[in-house]
Image (cartoon, rainbow, N blue to C red; front, side, top):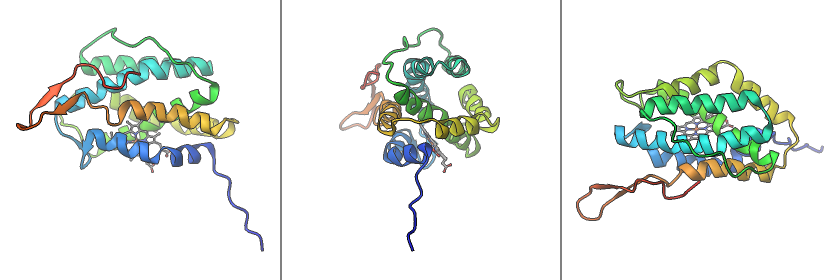
Length: 198
Ligand code: HEM
């Protein structure tokens, strides 16, 4: 009897390709499911702000999906409210192929599942702002994320190119904390800029 091997969907394939990257992005910022400090949480939101404004908007534009452009812009506004900043977003850049753009959007939209978990699990202090996480959780709960995953799976994409796009998101967040432990006294030095520019 021949047993046919199930063909992985685009989502499954991207999840598989980026498992290690996801783990690194998660463990860079959270330990035992929590952020160490408000400073770490702010640095994480800042890194996400750069990713959404530079890669997310560019990818949504490449896909020509106005609802996704609106979502990315709204996520940037939510991040600005959390950070108490305005208008310092990166110019959308690095437009790649449509497959690349699907991969970028897979990583950014899929992270709404992580956002829901962070809110539910008490990973952030009650007094910390949560506009961004709440917006991402609402996206996951509304059915829009499910619809996005369905569209991804119905679309013929170059899966390697899409993996490249997804990893560019994770790569900008993993191992990219703008603080370094200083040798000797365990203090932290803020480097101001992210080490890996987008
Ligand atoms: C910082 C802490 C994070 C935590 C605790 C976390 C946790 C999770 C959890 C629990 C899931 C659901 C897994 C499942 O349904 O089986 C998930 C999915 C996902 N997360 Fe994260 N995540 C984090 C950060 C991120 C970041 C920074 C990104 C990228 C920007 C990301 C991208 C994704 C993606 C794409 C999925 C969907 C995977 C799939 O196809 O099912 N996550 N995350």
